[in-house]
Figure 1 (cartoon, rainbow, N blue to C red):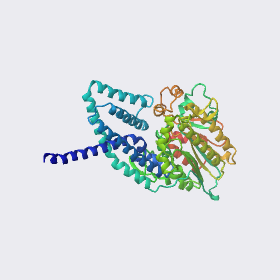
Figure 2: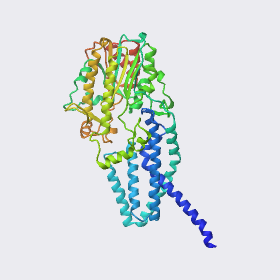
Figure 3: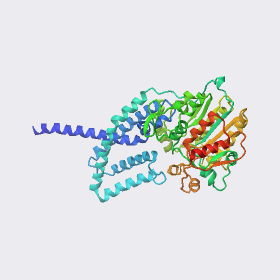
Length: 525
C-alpha cells in the first residue's frame, strides 16, 4: 500500500523534472539564438526599417532555427540530467563556457563590449577555467553554481512563449515589396532652369579633412572645392547616428529616436514625443510644391520607401550591414533556415572568403550609388538632386596607395576615395547644360565617430594613430555657387539642423556667397 502511495509522487516529480529540463533547454536555446533573433524582435524594429522588404523568409527561418536549437538543447540537458543530476562533473563547466560566450557575442553585437578587449576564445577559456578551479577547490560551490545556471536558464526559457509566436506572426505578416530604384516622367512644367546638387558624404570629419589633416594626406579635390566655396568651419551636428540625422535634416526637426511598424513605416521621437515621420513636410515635398523635380540616390536609409511619394527619381542601396546569422532577403525559407549551418561549415572547413563580407558589400553599395549619381546628374530634367554616399564611412574598402577598391583599408583610405569621388561628381556636373546654374552643397551627417568604431573589428592601427583616441564632433558643410572662384568662411557655430532652412532658401531663390554668409551669421547670432 505504501508503494502505491509513492508511485504518484514519483510520477509527479518526474513530470516536474521533465518540465524543468524543457525550460532549461529552451533557455539555453534562446541564449544561443539571441543575437540572431533580437534584431527582429526588438520592439523598435529598427533593423526591419533599414532592410529591403519583404523579410518574411528571414523571420520564418529564425523561428525554425530557434525551435531546432531549443530541441537540441533540451536533448543535451536531458542527457546531462540523466548522467549527472547533482551537477558534479565538469560537463556543466563546458556548457556554461559555451553559453557565456554566446551571451558575449550578443552584447558585442549590441555595442556594449569592446571586441578588442575580450575575444570569444579567451572568454570561453576563462569561464571553463573558473569552473575547473571551483570543481577542484570548492566542490560544493561548483554544485551551487550549476544550480544557479540551471535556474537562470529555466527562467530565461519562459521567453520562448512570446518569442516564437512573434517570429511566426512576422513570417506570415504581409510586408511591402520595396524597389531599389525607380524613375517617373517629369512634367514639362517642372523641368528646371537652375539646379541644386546636395552631396552628403557619410561620416566626413571637418577635423580630419581640413583642420588637422594627417601628414602625407593629399585631398586636392576637396581643397579645390573649399577654395571656391563658402565653408562653415564650426558646424554643430544634429545627431550621432545616420538614421536620425538624415530624417532630421530633411524634415527640419531634430529626431532623437526612431522606431518602425511591421510594414517599415517610420516614427520618430522629436521634442519629447513620438510621432509618425512626416515625409510630406520634408524638403522633397516642399521642392515639388515649389515646382521643382526631385531625385535621390542614397545609402542605408530606405529612401525610396520613406520619401518615394515626393521623388521623381530614386535609388537606394544598403548591403553594408549584413543580417546577423548570414540570413538574406530574397532567398527562400529553406535557404535561410540553413544559413547559420553554412556559415559554421565554412568556418570549420576553412572555406572562408579572404575579403571580409563588409568590404564586399560596402564596395557594391558604392558602385551602385556612383552609377545612380551619374545617371541623376546627367538627367537634366531633375532640378533638386540629393546624393548620400557611403564615404568615408568605416570600414575601409579602398587602398589609397594602389588605388584599388574592394580591399580592406582605413578611414584615411576612404577619405582619399572621398576626394576622388568628389572630383568625379564635379566633373559630371560640369558637363551638364545647366552647369553654370548649379549650386553644389557638400556636407556630412556627422563626424568620424572614433568612440564607436574603436570598439569594432573595422578599427585599424592607422585609425588609432590618426585619431589619437580623440573625437572631434564637427561635420563638414560647404556651399559652392555658380561661377564662384573665391573662398569664404563662416566661423561662428552653426547648427547643422539649419541646413534644412538653407536648402529651403535656395529652393525659393538663387543666393550669392555674400547673402549666404550674412544669413548664416544672422542665424548663428
